[in-house]
Length: 113
Length: 113
Image 1 (tube, rainbow over the protein chains, first blue to last red):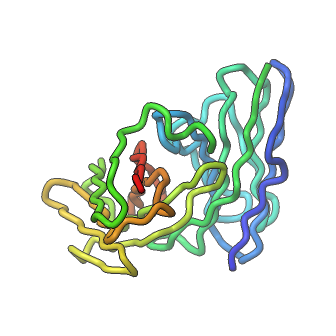
Image 2 (spheres, rainbow over the protein chains, first blue to last red):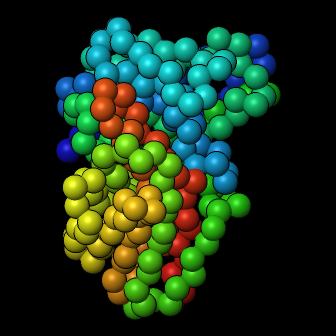
Image 3 (cartoon, helix red, strand yellow):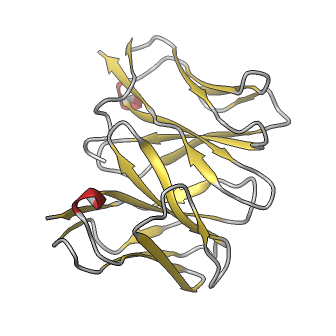
């Protein structure tokens, strides 16, 4: 089974802190994604990556950056956390470009106070 | 996540009835579609997918229908069970070189015993 692991289930950070959310997948998938999920808004794509050191902006990249130094790991970085970044963050991976399903981690519930 | 069911369209069905969940997608160039199920406190899980060269695909107790003319997708669940209670999302792959996977806002399915 594909396993996508997010490093933390719950996080509480202060406004202005730099925050790292880590995601690791164990199936040699090429693509990795970061979404945030908010009530009534569904999953919104922040960034995705289809190869090591490659990244593409999603629909809401402002206030975020990403890093993919190794194929199995995709990190989401909040440069200076703000209260409007309080959300559920979901990482996903898929095998290749195109028509393959994405597998999700359990999510990280981030609260910025 | 725990609160993703708030503010969502809700479909309430009796146990044993058939459920139909609808989704309008946005990009006429999308070439691959997926239905996901998300239970409380968990990440989304794959249910069934369909490629744009198909109109219908069946799985175990689930059927997905694709109408490209009106950009509409539906998920039919036969003999709905209490374990089917969850939030259901459709997702579209924008296709081509972008490999962008975009989600709808979701529908909460509530199964009454």
